[in-house]
Length: 402
Ligand SMILES: Nc1ncnc2c1ncn2[C@@H]1O[C@H](COP(=O)(O)OP(=O)(O)OP(=O)(O)O)[C@@H](O)[C@H]1O
Image 1 (cartoon, helix red, strand yellow):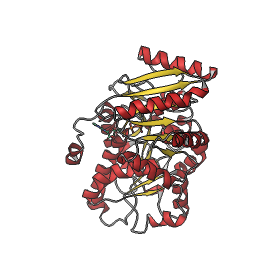
Image 2 (tube, rainbow, N blue to C red):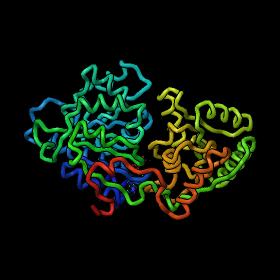
Image 3 (tube, protein in one colour):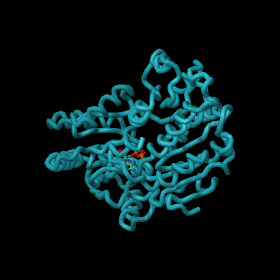
Image 4 (cartoon, protein in one colour):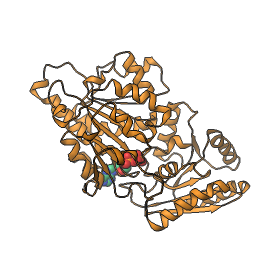
């Protein structure tokens, strides 16, 4: 595993990895709240793969029937493919299997993922996982790990019902000793860059909250100091010319750009406008089939297109070191959306910082802009982003402080 990491130029752990990986290795349930782009995916994948490989090789499991050892739950198919890609780099050489079941595919496709037997790691979106559970393709009560990635989205009311159904079928450990040997219970890992209220209440239904170690990074809810934040007050009709100018400047500098709109319809409209102006681009929005979105994101990653117009479906978790500029064509409706969009640039392992350019058109955006501007200037955390977990589980700072 170390060879694969160094091949990717990953030599030293990030602060979040340094604090969280040992706790997972010791069998604790962990809630990890750390800013965007700090390497949270490897934070959980490395201990998961290490332990599953150990179980596969252990004498006490030799006669056990094959089973899925870890389910990673993510909100979108793109993110599922991304996690699978990272996991496969480690699992393939170890002879372990990783499969995805995601939205936008029929039941036949979901069954196909299990045709070769249960994968060691299953990366799933909630709807697809529930379908797989109904067909008994995977047994949540036999897992060694259950990971909830992008927790703020998955604990949002739009997913909370499904998440509750899934958690109810998962046998979550309440202490590290329960995670060992045949009959073990699953270790729970909940990961996010922002946390909504109510997370503690949901977790309390499936495990002893006292058993959940919380790791929060010192920079949680801070704006990245190496990402320049610019706010441009413009009239609605001036947004398109301003965008065009920003795209031209980015093109001259060889930067790829993510342009965020608040609605799918605006993404489509803006796409037609840029088409008229002869600006090459691609689009991702939530009303497109998930498989199409995944294909579009792949073309962006490969450098086939440098401008990606997107709705917030692309703001959560997608890892690209290509983007140097994020444009908020529409000002985001919440601080959490701002943090996630801004987090697409200046990510761990990237060589340079990045910039966020936000168009501010409406008087009602001003209050949010002022809060963000002040936080960026003072290098303080964004207000009103407090975590429910902070109040409901034992704390441990990423600097090691308790
Ligand atoms: N220790 C490390 N050193 C250098 N680069 C790293 C390290 N760990 C992870 N990375 C790289 O950092 C990038 C961001 O990682 P990742 O996508 O896991 O971030 P994240 O914290 O999950 O972000 P988000 O909150 O946006 O989902 C990836 O390209 C990854 O390969």
